[in-house]
Amino acid sequence: MNKKPPKVLVVATSRKTRGGIPSVVNVHETGTQWKKYQCRWIETHIDRSAWRKLWRFFISLIQFIFLIPFYDLVHIHLSEPSSAKRKYFYFKVAKWWHKKVIVHFHAFSPETTINSRYKPLYKKLFSDADLVITLSNQWKIWVEEILGIKDNVTVLYNPCPLAQLNSMDKKDNIILFAGTLNQRKGFVDLIRSFSTIASRYTDWTLVFAGNGEIEKGLTLAKELNVEKQVIFKGWVSGNDKDELFRSAKIFCLPSYMEGFPMAVLDAWAYGLPVITTPVGGLPDILEDGKNALVFEPGDTQLLSDQLERLILDDGLRNAISQKSLMLSQTVFNVENINQQLADIYKKVLQ
Image: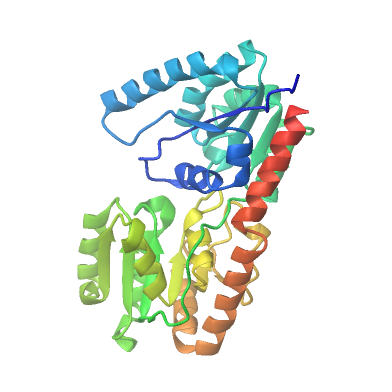
């Protein structure tokens, strides 16, 4: 009798929720491993009102309890403490059924997660998991050193999404930011830095694509007399997002904390030259002046200099643009990443 192929339950945030985890799982869903292992996505959290969040949690947990006997491996995506606390319930059910469990860690900072008062929770989850996936070598080092876990941690980069590029795309003088507008993402720093050079480059525009503190951004742009050169699009997706990335000439993400930012991966997929900070998993990859321009978080003067450098130097923009495309087609190629995930599933199941 032929043995039934193994099946994987993927436990992650809802498709309808904005953020890195659903973006990653959406890309994993395009891989051959998704069909091979008959993956099923259990959507545990939704970005809605408190009662809707609670309802989604209970419904998904009941669904999970019903399905778990028929699956062999559980792939749990989690990040900050609220996420870890929710996912602990699914983790315990999976272990009660003696299922293999992978914990995929998407945190912003060690200080808010594995090196915080929630350290015991993360240590319990990671120690009892069959495998822990981190987003970079730096995050692997942090997990191993802070939690004292050595033998079950591996690295899997987030993949670049697929982008259909056209050499005839019209590029506008746009500096693009994509992500939630909050302190962690450093969007205020970007407005301040741009304001110091905006009067010299009146044909350039700073465009923010994301929800969050838009009113704060509008007020600051007006105070700094750059409101005519700063545009807030709100959250964009689908064709609107595609058009923005196609039309921009520069991408900037001045974050203070990251796991491995999907916005930068988006920029690489579209061949945009990136200005960003060496936070989270990015130091694994960044080479200042070669595949990106880099500055320390909060250094608004250097950010201004890096913006002006790319605005003025077409050759540098084009060179870094080519490096972006190369990264999206090699290290972060979606097919390569999905094959690595298939290899991980095979190894854990054996």
